[in-house]
Length: 331
Image (cartoon, rainbow, N blue to C red; front, side):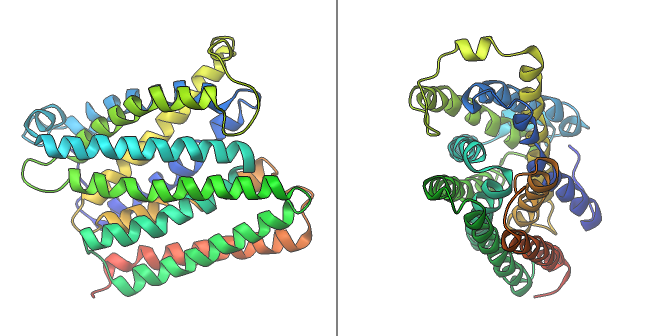
């Protein structure tokens, strides 16, 4: 099993995690007339496939007890259960997040939803595994909270003529964030203790949890769409263009790559889960950049909204920069 032995390599993995987490949703934007529920069936296939790819490559670099297959066979049932529950909780949150992207756009759904999850997860994970300078970690967290506030204010100004849509987009994003902040502590528990899962095997079991949750939850959302509109059938899935199915699978593969890198960095002794999740959540800034500059989601917005967005980006960069040095500074 490959495990980074220096903070520099772990930090690089966290940067890649941040980019992947903030970029996967572009594949959904490239299927504009496809309902997110249909997209999601292929998205989870990409997650499962990539969990096997990374498990049998980086996770199986040697045949010792920590290798992917041997670690799965030797792990305690309680650790496996924690990983499954983490996948279920994450998936419920992610379904809401994808719905929020469809309602409100990348530039809002990610900063509000994932930003809230960041606050929640960092606090819980630091209580479970206190690593890194707490003043820098929580100081950076406060700055990120301010960035989220600026983003929400910018969105409200942009959508001032459509108050119902504004409220719905933010509410769904907040619900996604509350659930999203709860999944990582399950992963932390799965990675700790005697006969615990390793980061690659925990990722595979986590993916299984996602699949098990998707089957009933996504079907319910097809029958009762949270974004409004008519009841969906599988005809819309099977009639989609071939490249759209591939884009959705690619989206799941990109997301999972970011996830397993984050789990691996979290498992490194110098980093810990609180800092790992916090840096990975820089995805909020990456996704907002895509939303603003590639998809022009704030095109035509008033100048005041654009100024608020600029402050949001600055605060995210500063907050994440402060968090990134927390492992290097003594308590």
